[in-house]
Image (cartoon, rainbow, N blue to C red; front, top):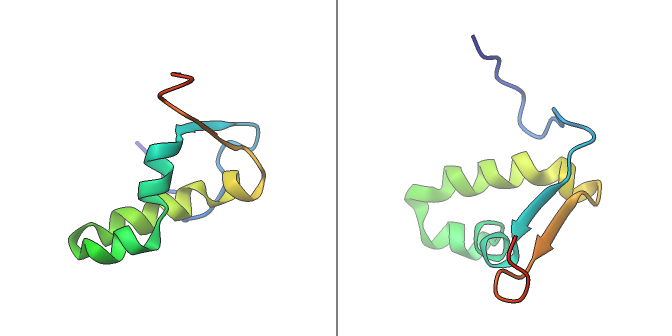
Length: 69
């Protein structure tokens, strides 16, 4: 059984998210979401899910070319 959390809730308050800058630049860009209306819910969900981590300075980006994960 799984429970669904409200969007924007921080289920893991000690977690740090590391993501490729290339991915973050694409998925967190409103213009990209607007250009692909069928994917708009994914863009909105990504922003909502990552908001607590971004606001808490726990969303860290890396350059996949110079510093692969």
